[in-house]
Image 1 (cartoon, rainbow, N blue to C red):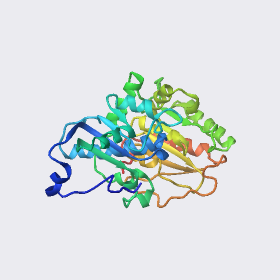
Image 2: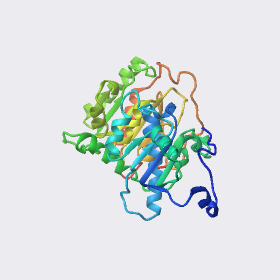
Image 3: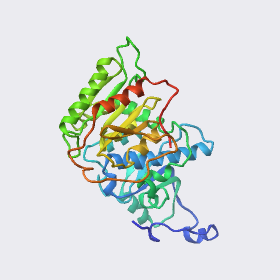
Image 4: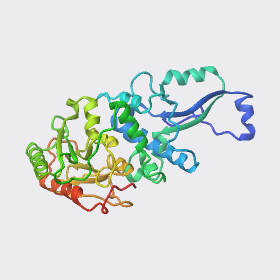
Length: 357
């Protein structure tokens, strides 16, 4: 997708009139031009966890440093020049409904809209536009560090809670209410912090069966102690409504590396909110750590009985997949995971929160 002169040209302001003419068609509002292909767009993580989250961080920074009011105006339209029909819809049917909930007044224009503008053979001026390009993002120095589209946004300074406006808007419009969230376990209180374990035991990449069973048993022991409420969720068997409701009430999200961890977008940030991502031992990728840092959740990587986390400003060095990364025999020692969860729910409030960067 290397752009040619048909896609992008840089012109000198002094010669602009000769190129653009005396007048133009004006398109009001913010236009988000998503210059990507269906190879990535039709995936919950790539759409929401990279394209939308990353672009909103950059847009939020622009609003903040231009001293504009908050919350900022939402996009008037999303333009997908390389998408013909509904190729941006993911197989699980998550992307589109959540877009309609989050950006309820925005249109989603595809290739026909883009070609119509070209056919006008007129200059079209967008009042405000953001071009989101995966190819351009890969040229940022951080791309070689984390190999993620949104890597280059990680040093863009913005508000700590920049995502909260979209999170709460999406949840309220989708559910019709904002769920109550319990963060701290209080003795005698019937409502406890919610721990959601996203099980992939029906998928290809999954835990060893006996390790899955021990993990569930270890989590249930925490529930018996009265410090949390545990839900074991197989997202593919739940309605989207129930998925969003559960995650938006959760404080800790656990799962094998996979698409379900993108749901951390709807988990409210707090000093205890945590994403625990299980890998095959010694494997490490940043798909769900970078969103966690953006959202204010503490991220832990799990290698069987070892949990590792990195404070703000520090990161694991390198990207490693290794044998068995996508396999069905990923080990995990449940009591080790339960120990960290107990610490996260009971440690003093002034200690470790989420790492923003």
